[in-house]
Every structure is written in C-alpha cells, then in structure tokens.
Amino acid sequence: MRRFLPWMGAALLLSACVSGPSRVAAVPPGDGVPIQLGTKHSLHSALLDEQRGVLVYLPPGYESSSERYPVLYLLDGDAHFHHATGVVQFLAGNQHIPPMIVVGVANTVRTRDLTPPAHGNFPVPGDTSGRSIAQSFPTAGGADRFLRFLEEELAPYIEARYRTRPYRVLVGHSFGGLFALHALMNRPESFNAYIAISPSLWWNEGELVRGAVKSLERLPAQERFLYMSMGNEGDGMLNPIQQLARTLEQTHPERLAWRYSFLENDHHGSTPHRSLYDGLEAAFADMRVTEALLRSGDLARLEANYARLSKRLGYEVRPSEDTVNTLGYQLLASGKAEAAISVFRRNVELYGDSANVHDSLGEALEAAGQLDESLACYQRALQRGVKAGKVHPAYSQHVERVLWKLSPASKPPATPATASDKAP
Figure 1: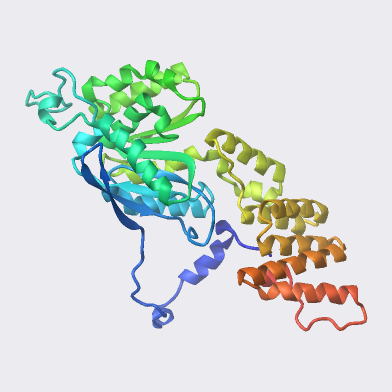
Figure 2: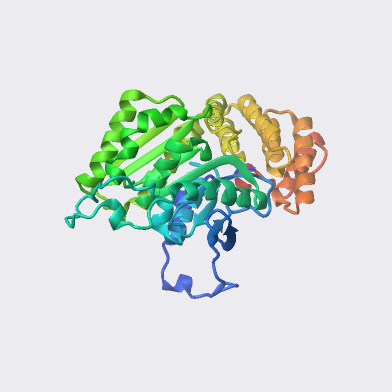
C-alpha cells in the first residue's frame, strides 16, 4: 500500500492550511485536552547526596511498539526540554535522525555540576574586578562527580525503565558545553556523541583546549562524534573554540568524527536551538535520504548508507518501512515491475509483521502478471491486518480483484482498488 513520506505531502498540507474563519468554527471532539510533552521523574543520587529531577520524552508510537531507541541526555533540561523535544520529533519525523528518548536533566547547583575544578588565578574574560575564576564561582569544580552521576546512576535508571539502544548523546550549552567537552576528553566512553553549544572554553585559560591532543588519544575503539558551535559572542568565547577546531583539523584524531559551526547571526542565548538541529543532523548524516535517492529507486545505495551509519553507531539501523516502500513505488511507476518486486521483497524481509509490506509486494507482482503469488501476498496482508486490528478496505478489494482475474467467468468487483485509492 502506498504511503506518503513528509516531503510528498507538501501540496496537501498547504491546501489544508489555507482556510478562512468559517473553516475553523466547529469545535473538534476532545477540545481542551492537554498536550503532553513528557513526564517528570525524581531519583535520589547517592553520589550527589540529593534528589535529582529529570524530564523524559518518549517518541511517538513508543507504547505500541517493541522498538529500542537512542537516548539524548540534555543538560539544563528544565530550560531546553520544550524546544529540544520539538527538534528531535521533527527531525525523526522527516527521517533525518532515528526516533530518540530525550532525558532533560534539571539543575540544582548548576555551576557546581557543570564545571571542572578552577586552577590558579585565571580571570574570567571581560571581568575587570580582578577576581579569579575560583573567586567568581565559589561552588565550581564538581564536573567529575556529576559525570559519574550521569553515567553510574541516571543512565542505568533510564535504561532499566525504557527500551534503549546502546547509544547515548550528551548535549550541553555554555557551562554545559564546557562539561560536554570535559566528558569527551576525560571519560569518552560515557557517551557516543557530544554536542557542545557555545562552550565556555575560556575556563582555566583554555585548559581543555591545550590538553586536547593528549586527551583524545584515549578514545575508545567505537567512533565518537563531536559537534561544536559558537555564536557571535566576542573573542573571549570565540578564540578558544577556534583554536580547538584548528587543533582537530591539524591532528585528525583517530576514531573521532567532528564538526564546528560558527553561527555569525546568533548570540549566546540563541545558539542552542539551531545548534541542536544541526548537530543531530550531522551525527546521523548517513541516515538522511534525499528526494533524489528516493526517486531513483536505488535500494543498494540506500542500504549502503545505512550500513555505514550502523558501523559508526555500533548498532543496526534500518531504513524505515515507508522509505523502502517509496523506492518500490517509484520503480513501479516507472514500469520497472521486476525491480520493484525486489525492493518490496526486501521490505517483507525487514518488516514481515506489517500488513502493508505484503500488500505492496502484491501490487508489484500483480503488475508483473504473477497473479497466484500476488493473491497470496494480498491474503497475507488481509490476515495481518485483521490480527493487528487495522484492516484497510484496499486489502480485501485487492483480494477480490485478483480472484476475479484468476476466474474470468466471474464479474469484476464494483469498485476495483488501486494503489492511489489507499493513499491518505
């Protein structure tokens, strides 16, 4: 059965959005029902000796599936949870990233948790008071203990309660960006991908930058990913991250994929949203399926992209059922029925419990004149639809149509169905 991917429905979406006042007068059922973005949780940390609050977002369809998901750990979660979950849902819905669980880590003593110990009498850039970092931030220095909390207490708490993949993303802004780079350079095995947004690398006069080459020699065998960004925030913020980017460019650390973006039109407060979007896209770059690839029907190229991505991530990532189906229908529309059959057969291998993939294979076999096998596929689609409680009218119509073709003496069904009849 043909389905539309998000980019295919632009015209339909536009027509639905253009409406006058009379079109919105009716109040739909369920009006006033709250929209839920996530749930709040609290756990006691023995390492920090305090209660810690977390916000948890689950991807659409989590409750009705058995799928496992990567987890994004979001520092300053109470401040960034709303926009971050929107970015994740949007990118996943357009198949630029896999669906993810988002864990927003709420703050208690922010400076304590997100900063390494302050050394010496290094000043804060731009501070003319003469005070050192230690004097300006007397609670600083708890980054290592907080990292242990994330790795030894919070992650096991999440992984015991939710279906997760062995892939963790850490996202931090400002001091949180400093913390993300501190984690990468001191315990790189704790997360798989690090997104450091406007990181305060001036801390201890660029200590992390100076030690980057030696620190990154400790990277584990599985590749790590780093995305860094900086807005137009002045030399005190910009110079250290530019130096780090130059160092990475010159030394090419093994087992580290990285990217740096200078966001000229953003300031310190506006960098998180754009950076999260760009950072996640970069981390899962091989997952992005262009319209040209979809229209090409090139299954081998699509699967090669996903094979590269799976190798980088350390777990298998498969193209979605709808993506593979779209390739098949492009081939079928071009008159390449045998090639379409091969693509639809692959979708059956990947998603055999789905009624839709059997129905689509049946359409291609029917187009190729292989009616007996087509009928068997349509019947399997109908059976799986009944079992799942989701029987599309097209399933039974397809069975009737092929039965008629196999029995010429019978009358044709009153309204024969086609693939277009099933499009939403």
